[in-house]
Length: 236
Image 1 (cartoon, rainbow, N blue to C red):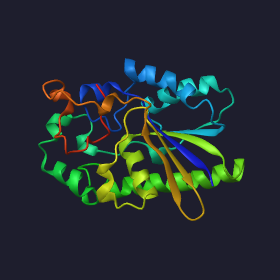
Image 2 (image 1 turned 180 degrees about the vertical axis):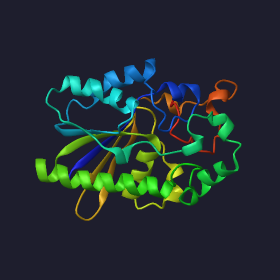
Image 3 (image 1 turned 90 degrees about the vertical axis):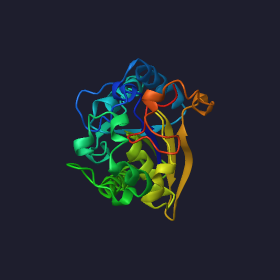
Image 4 (image 1 turned 60 degrees about the horizontal axis):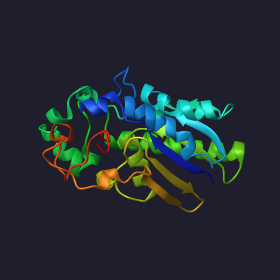
């Protein structure tokens, strides 16, 4: 079966503003995100990609555009089921503000029980994303053969939920996974089990450096033990 290359979109204007973008229209890549997207073709240069699949949101389309420009003829497909989680009434709000919501502790500790007010449940988010991946695996294999490789550009919580499924992890553990902007996660699917080959690979270890807690506190918004809903802005 195929190997799936999951790319999180590059850093967005909402990421740097500390806003949970969700499906808010008009959220573009920021300057760093544009640079991350420009580097993507080189990072994937050795891979014979059969197809590209994108979330319909602008920041994902912008992330894939340099890759499409570098590979004329690479087919692009839009897949609604890998769009960002529908955060409902939370979309467009500051993460610092949301950290005080009682529901946030459930998002962190028991996400399988979460349904965002006016939005969707995290269970539904994972189910639709995994269904999309499985169906695209079958389609890519049928059209391009066993062992084909394809790229899918999506969002932090979507990628984390797909990885959790591949590892056989309960959704309640998926906040232990991290996917930074423009990171690459690779999963090889086989008849009996998936294999996680790469997880959140950016080629940059800056995010592992000790943090100065006096700097960036306003944009981190959550305690070090919490996962950033939506995936965060990555290394400063």
